[in-house]
Structure formats: C-alpha cells, structure tokens
Image: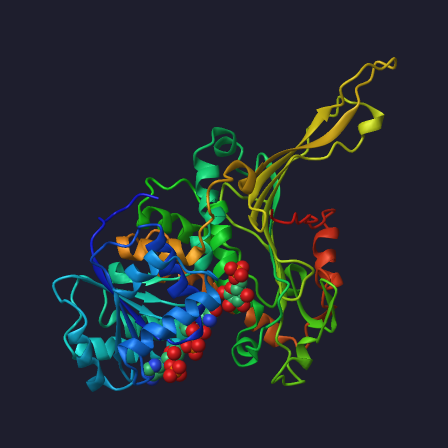
Length: 497
Ligand SMILES: NC(=O)C1=CN([C@@H]2O[C@H](COP(=O)(O)OP(=O)(O)OC[C@H]3O[C@@H](n4cnc5c(N)ncnc54)[C@H](OP(=O)(O)O)[C@@H]3O)[C@@H](O)[C@H]2O)C=CC1
Ligand SMILES: O=C1O[C@H](COP(=O)(O)O)[C@@H](O)[C@H](O)[C@H]1O
C-alpha cells in the first residue's frame, strides 16, 4: 500500500495495557516491530491502566507477557531497546480528572497514537478524558477495536461519541483481517495480474465462496459471544471486508479513501436479505458436543457459563448477491463457524465452464477452473487447470487430468517471516496510513445489511440448526449450494513446515 505520511516518532499510548488483547497481541507485535527495526528510535510506548503500578512492575509485567505470548526466548538487545521506551500511567478511564497524569508521559509537539484496547463502552469516556486534559489536537490518532456496536444504532452512538473529539482522518478502526498478508495480497493478485483483471466478472466467474472456518469454540468468552453470535463476531466485519476486496472495482490509487470508496460501493450493492428471502439465502447453526482433531469438546450449550436456552448461532452460511453490473447473477457464498474440523480461511473463485466440450464422452463433465486463495493456514494461491496426460494412445483421444498450479508462500518465500496482522496494523497507524482501517460509512453499511438478516432471524421462532462439533456445519448449509448444483470447496489443509 502507498504510505500517505512519513516515518516520524510518536507517543504510542496503550489504553487497557493489562488486558487480554494488549498482552496477547499488541505488546508482542510492538516487540516484533522493534526486532525488525521498524520502530522509530524516538517513539515511546505508554501503557495505561487503572491499576496503581510502578514503572518497574509494569516493565516486569510486559516482559512476562512477551515470553508467555510472544517468543519463548526474547532477543536481549531488542528487549533492552523496547524496555527503554516503556512508560506507565495509572488512569481511571471513567474519571476525567485522572487523565492529567498523561501530561508527564507525552510530548504535545509530537504525534500521539491512542490505542483503545478497552471495552467499546468506555471509548466515549476516554475521548472525553483526553479532551478535558487538552491533549487532543489534529496530530492525535485514535485506534478503535471491534466490536463497534451491536447493531447500526449502537455503532452510530459509539462513532458519534468519538467524532465529537476526532475527525474521521484521525480515526483508525481495526479489522485485524485487513492486516493479514494474504488478505492484503487480494489487492495485488487482482490488480497486478492482467489475467485476473480481465476475467473478474459475471462473464467469466460462476460463483465465489468465502469460508472462514475455526476449530476453536468460544474460548471462555460466553458473556461476549452469546450476545454477539457468529454473525456479529465474524460476518459483519471480517467476511464482509474480504468480500469487498474480492468484489470491488479497481480503486483509482492505493490511497485510503480510494480503496474505501470502492469497498463501500460493494457493501451498498449487497442485495438486502429480509424475512421474505432469509430462509432461501441463509443457514445458521449451533454446535453440539463432538470431536475436534481427536479431542472431545462440549456443545455450545454446555460451555462454561452457558444459558441452556440460548439460540445464538455459532455458524452462518449466506448466499449473498451483489446487485451491480460486474457481479450480476454471481452468488457469493459465505460460510463461517466455530468448532469446525480445521482452522482454514479461503476464497475460492469458480470460473465458468467451457461453452463447448471438445474432448468427447470421457470428459462429459469438464470441470471448471478454480482459483483458490488460501488466507490461512498454508498461505498461498492455487489454480486448478485441466492438463493433457503425457503419452501416446491408439484411440486418437486425449487423456486429461485435473492439475494444480500451486504457489505456497512458505515455499516461495521460505526466508520471509509472515508477520502477524497486528504488526502490520500497528505499523500503519504509526505511519499514519488509514488504508487498512475501516471507515465509519463502511461499518455502518455493513451493519445495515447484517441487521436486516438478524431481524429476519428474530422474526422466526426457529432455533439454529444443530451441527456436531468437528463437522463442516449443519446439513442445510450443504443444501444452500446443492440446490443450485454446487458444493462447498473441500479444504485440504496442509501442515505448515
Ligand atoms: N482479546 C482479544 O483477543 C480481542 C479483543 N478485542 C477487543 O479489544 C478490546 C479489549 O479486549 P480485551 O483485551 O479482551 O479486554 P480485557 O477486559 O481483557 O481488557 C480491557 C482492559 O480495559 C481496562 N479497563 C476497563 N475499564 C476501565 C476503566 N474504567 N479504567 C481503566 N481501565 C479500564 C481493563 O482494566 P482492568 O484489568 O483493571 O479491568 C482491562 O485492562 C475490546 O474492545 C475487545 O472487544 C478484539 C478482538 C480480539
Ligand atoms: O475477531 C475475531 O477473530 C477471531 C478469528 O481470528 P483469526 O485471526 O484467528 O482468524 C475469532 O476467533 C474471534 O471470535 C473474533 O472475535
């Protein structure tokens, strides 16, 4: 992506620095950026939490967590550099008076990045607190974690609270899928290769499948997840972002607004799903007890803290349609679920069949070409093609075989480490590039589409369809494609070397 701003030092202020996200993802990502010499030498990291703690104790806490969640053995030189950047400030984020302490840790003449790794319910309090201590000016950036709201209305409330103090140009809304190398590669694959640029529409493509399967369950997060469900947790953000990148028109440039304008147009063109078509276009499921990778796992209703009446979905499949010129008549099938057999995320583009079969009776059913974009794991790109089997025959016919052109990132880029999505996103925030962050209108448009489906589900009293943990979801999700003579792509996950 093109960098809009330059490499300059900043004060990186991490609100919620003792929380789960900070410990597991953000601090280890800052460490990796340090290790790669991508942190500006004068940048500082200011941890903020409500616990009264000395700087020494905070340093110890960060060190422990880096070992626990990052590298088992820290590089001493890297750690020494990172340690020297650390500050700690004790702030009760609901108390506007407690923010003044930040004055001792940040330099008003420099860029300040405020990363809100806290519950979204206190984003408004934090913005008010920063305002009250007169820290906010046009050089301050604010990073918001998901979920931004529970529906369109609540997302507008949060966005309004933040917009009272920050201009949209200062707001960085995280969707960590946009930081994944392979999701970024969708842009290069589409727009740096003429074979895909010219064949990417209803003339050549039959349908598209986007699957994000998870083998984990809800990981002790019943309180959050049961309120959200897979639709809000994964579809509203990650799957719709992937869909937008696959379906968008070429942006004029790679700057943030050119890309976001094009993604927004796709979201706006999504055909509404409501009570009149929800049964034909969606399937929702909830896992029951089963086995995942040989391990016995409980059903959703037996998870810790579960409410046994819950109708929350842990699986969603949707036939989405994009009502524009490029995609007329091309369904986009989306599928995501917890407790599926493997963690695997893929985009599969099914091209149209040949208009005429030259190869006679033995190849009555000439299969269509497929482009498989493996987002994770075993990141890569694969194209299935029909190929002549080498050799002579006395029948005059040609033997064909389905073959694969396979680009595996781990083989092609064996010397490159694939960075975690958060490393990329933290770097981009510090560089001041918004291209990989979600604009307010995108989030609100995504909620509009998702809210309509959720409302349609609520209007039926039916519970989600059960599926056994360790399977690919409810039987009806197979039916969603089978009734159109299609089937889900069968992932063959390859173990990473
Ligand atoms: N954890 C994850 O993997 C992911 C998290 N997110 C999002 O990231 C954000 C943070 O999540 P997570 O780290 O899991 O949550 P945690 O509850 O683990 O951490 C939140 C942090 O905010 C602090 N906090 C809450 N209220 C206040 C307050 N009034 N004053 C000072 N500190 C306060 C908590 O402090 P204390 O410890 O004192 O309570 C805690 O350190 C959420 O928006 C979440 O949805 C998004 C994707 C993944
Ligand atoms: O945002 C979320 O994403 C994770 C899946 O992310 P991944 O990078 O591991 O694919 C999901 O498990 C979680 O429920 C959700 O909140």
